[in-house]
Length: 222
Image 1 (tube, rainbow, N blue to C red):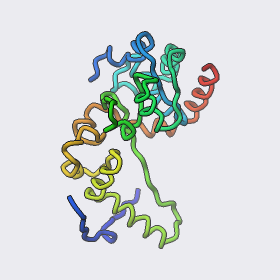
Image 2: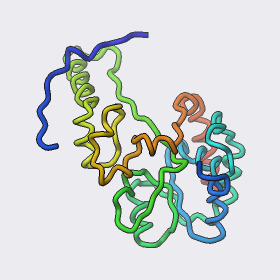
Image 3: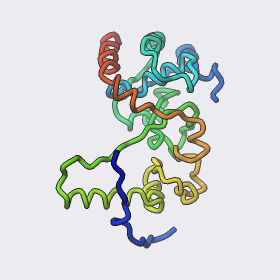
């Protein structure tokens, strides 16, 4: 394991301006009887497995390793009642606002602050993104990349980015800098993180190919 310091890229900055209950987890079945629902299509079914198991009553703390047989059995139960299997993040808010669907799984930044759309982070999946510098990268390019990484880690910069879209960064010092009138929109606040579960990246790395294969097979029956 190697450790690296960002000290050489640091400098001063000046800124311009400031448990759903078990029956709630069974939304799949309720919606199938009472409303039109939409769910999304995503490469390798990264969220489907987790959400399908939550809907089938699996407690958050027992999600991983995912029971794929149970997950796809859950999807089979409701597939005939799903109006749209969306493929682009812009679809859920539009479909909801057009009243084509009444429920949707969506990226939080697509629905937060949208007129006429209520949302919750309860039992939502909190996911991580990663940035890397490839081994053997040109030293000048590595230096530029590390400089950008540092800028991305500065809480004041993360707060500025959150003004544009409500996907918040991971700085532990960020929350006090977020606008108080929109604090409920941000997935990484202490209150919202508490009700979400973190995706198991290691499990997905080891099982993504199998999930993708089964997801493509499942789609053939839609």
